[in-house]
Amino acid sequence: MYRRHLKRTRRRLASPRSWRLRLVFWGSALIIGAVAAGFALIAHHADGFYRQLHTSDPWLAYALT
Image (cartoon, rainbow, N blue to C red; front, top):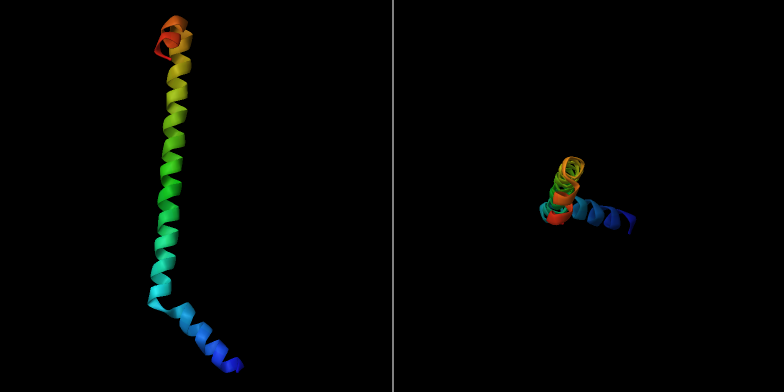
């Protein structure tokens, strides 16, 4: 009984379909993480631009928002 369970578990862990699903899951997670990091970087630069604009001409910054 234990051997049958071990064999079935080993087969399930090593199956190509199972690995394909894992790769899709982790690949999607990496892509979503990269997009989130890019969005945070763009937001950081936009905030710096707004602060610089607000320092040079406060009314123009308020007019744009």
